[in-house]
Length: 151
Image 1: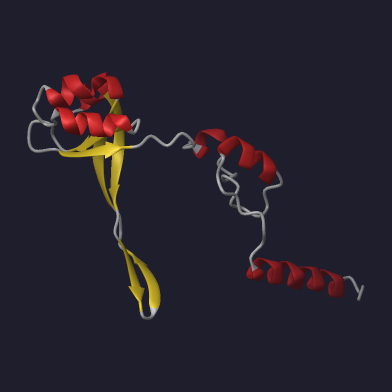
Image 2: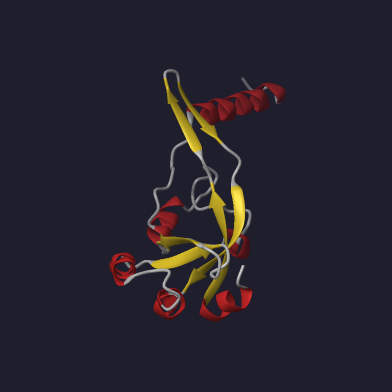
């Protein structure tokens, strides 16, 4: 929405507005299609000159967000009622496409470096197969043995 301002004082971004509905009886989860909008994330040092000087935020709002090591992002035009959000920068966010797009963050049971992923990302890493995965592997091994005549 404000490309020059965004590249000067922050970074261009995309905002995803997503709704998730959970029913309780019966328990189900429903996910609506995400609404994607162009956005901008401001560097923390630029919040005051960009947002406060335009009277979009007051001192309490700035202080409250900054206390938690956060910064501000917005959707829309800064000159026409933008949607402002105090946002948290995830320290373990990574661009998997730049690293190795074939490899996830340790959620794949085929990863053989689960302990390394735990140390590097500090994320909860699934290290067990689901029952369905175990069954599929068993069936495939049984099929290979019977095909080769070893049983």
